[in-house]
Each structure stands twice: as C-alpha cells, then as structure tokens.
Amino acid sequence: MITELVLFSILGFLVGVFSQLLVKYLSNKFHYISKLGLFTNKYLNNLTIFIIFLLLIIVYTIVMASCYIFFRNSYVLKEAYQIWHICFLAGFSVCLIVSKYYQDKKRIKVNE
Image (cartoon, rainbow, N blue to C red; front, side):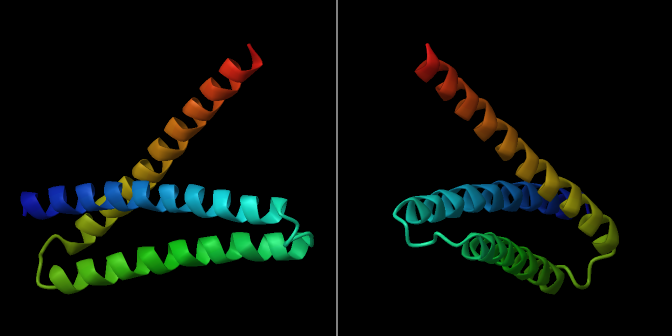
C-alpha cells in the first residue's frame, strides 16, 4: 500500500518535470520557426500553443490510464490519484521555477 503511494508520487513528479521540459523544448522550437518568418500570423502561433497543450494532455492521459490498468485492483487507488495529481503539479512547478531562475540568471550575466 505504501509502495503504491510512493510509486504514484514519484511517477507524478517525473511526469510533471517531463511535461514542463516538453513545453519548454517545443516552445523554443516553435519560437525559432516563427523567427524564420514561417508563422507570421498570430493565429498560427496560438495554434502551436494549443498543439503543445494538446500533447501535454495526451501524455497525462496515457500515464493516468496506464496507472489505472496497473493498479486497478488496489485499495488505495483514490488516494493514489490525489497524490499523483499533487506530485504532477509539484514537478511541473519545480521545473518551471528552476528554468525561470536560470533564465533570469543568464539574463543578468548578459546585462552586466
């Protein structure tokens, strides 16, 4: 029972970090493409943001479905899902904060 909760929390944290890294990578790629002038229309840029979040939802759904299949006979499934959501948001937030910190640190070095 405890091992399932620990597994869910670690898995949720890792998927949150992976999701944030995926968002950063794809947004950098689309930003590079938009600098080339291929996506000058603002609606196309909004479409790329929508596609990025759609990919995040697909990753999130696949992980949740696989966890449900793996733990479908578990007694702690509801608690594990709640812990998984909290850890997913924690991983997503930690990766976002760390990336912003290093981005600001790099910006300060360039300005000096």
